[in-house]
Amino acid sequence: MLTIGLTGGVGSGKSTVADLFKALGVPVYDTDAIARDLVEPGQPALQEIISVFGNDIIDASGRLNRQKLKRQVFSNAADRNKLESILHPRIRESLLAKIQCCTASYCVAVIPLLVEKHWQDIVDRVLLVDVSEATQIQRTQQRDKISESLIKRIIKTQASRDERLAAADDVIDNNGAPDTLRIQVEQLHKKYLKLAQQQ
Image (cartoon, rainbow, N blue to C red; front, side, top):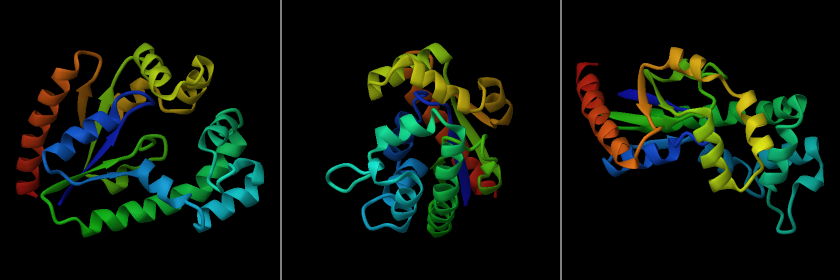
């Protein structure tokens, strides 16, 4: 079975691309969704986050205040490293379990920090959703309603566009009209089915 690692910077359109693969019947495993499950109330990872960051990181309903934590970890590299050391081994383990259970010709694993964390070893090909930094900022502001300065801080913590392009086996250009995305995904779908048959 072929595993495609889908990656890209903040606001690049990874979720939109993942949804297009899902619409074609391809199993998609999203590490952000895995991370959200790991920090649900009662989960060991949440307890560990509270012990490191304090009860202030929890909202009135007992859930993780994700926006507050995001602001904190993208303002402090040491805090970001602490959070990643709690979550990333668990995310990786859960993702590998999902991939191993997959019976389709190929699957897509959405891994935003694939290049930064060198997770190429768990995928067969790297698919990059590529956009300009200006597009990243505009789309993230529209989606998350956060400041441009915070978005720029997030971008600085991620691999550069050139680093991602160098690591990619396949590239989807998401700078243009939304219609072009579907065409690119459909072409890649055919390519991946062929590659999966050859494996």
